[in-house]
Image 1 (tube, helix red, strand yellow):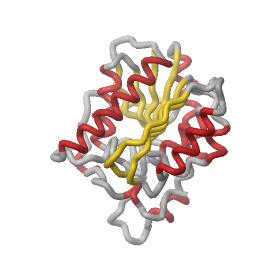
Image 2 (cartoon, helix red, strand yellow):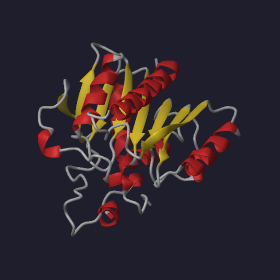
Image 3 (spheres, rainbow, N blue to C red):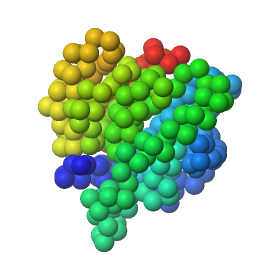
Image 4 (cartoon, rainbow, N blue to C red):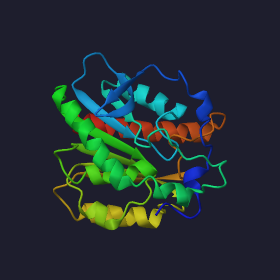
Length: 245
C-alpha cells in the first residue's frame, strides 16, 4: 500500500492542466495504450518510463523522457492510468480510494503488449524506470528478462521484499532520506537482498536531504532540489548506458 503519509501526492504535484504541448515528443498509441513517445533518430534501444500517481502528462516527467531520448534511446511513457491521474483536490476520492482503481499488477499486465510492440520494432534491448507508484510496475517487470533487461526504481512505493527477491535483471534503486513511503531502512533491506543475489547486478543509493518524489516533483526555484534531481537522472542514465546500450 502506498504510504499513509501521502508523500506520494505531495512534494510539488504537477500542474496537469498546463501539460498540453509540453515536451519534444509526440502522442502515439503503443501496445494499445496512449503514450508519450520521444526518440533519438533510429535508436534500437528502448526505455519505458512508468509514471507516479500523477500520470504520463506530468511536465517534468515528459521533460525527463526527452532527456533520456537525447541520450540515445527510444522512450515510451504509457498512460497506464487511462486518463485518470490522482487529483489531490478531489476530497471525495482520497489517495487510498483512488489506488483501488489503479493496481500496479494490472498496469504490469498492460505494459507487456508495449514490450511486445517494441520488440516487433526491432529494439535490441529494453529498460524501464518507475517513479513512486510506477516503481512497483518496474519491480514486477524486472522479474523476467523477457520483458526488460535492466530497471531503475526511483522513490518507489508498495515494493516489497518479495518483489526484490524475484528480480532477475540488473536493478538500481534510488531512495530518499526523508521518505515515509519507502524509508531508508526498507531500501537497505532491498540492498541486502540484492547483494545476496550475485547473479543480479545492482546499485542502491539513498539521497540525503530530499523527500519522496524528488526526481520528478521538485521546485525549480530550489537549487538544491534541482541538483538532487539531476544527480538521480544521471545515475539512471548511467545505469541504462551500462546495461541497455
